[in-house]
Length: 127
Image 1 (cartoon, rainbow, N blue to C red):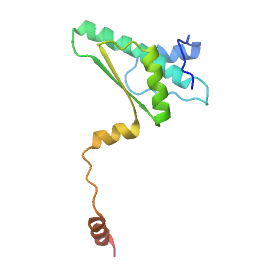
Image 2: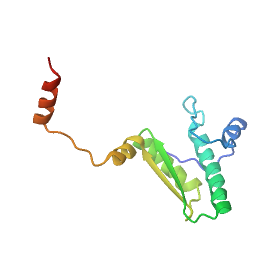
Image 3: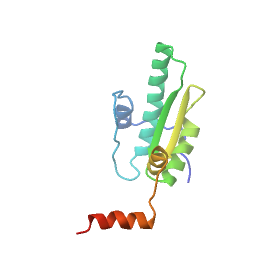
Image 4: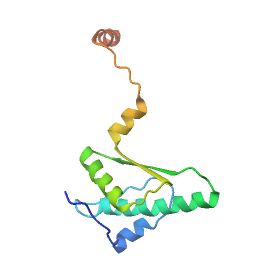
């Protein structure tokens, strides 16, 4: 899979990238419409916004960014794009992960019951 290099945003992408509102941004579109490129351009824009904010507030801690994807293939592709297009430096820490792996780590330690415990619990619900 070839990785995208520096891309000039279209007018539609530019309108999405330049919005600096708090909250979650959902980018929708058909396959090949530029969703990933738009998301990466948005990421670069937000990194600049938050780095400037840290400089104004004179806070020494780095900006932490979490990018979640649906599957490992997309995670690897996004990681490759981030590595080539986003200048992290010391002041930015970007984590790219799948949602499943991120959620699993967040929930650790998990306790999974054995067959006997599960059967006993289910029998308690049976009529």
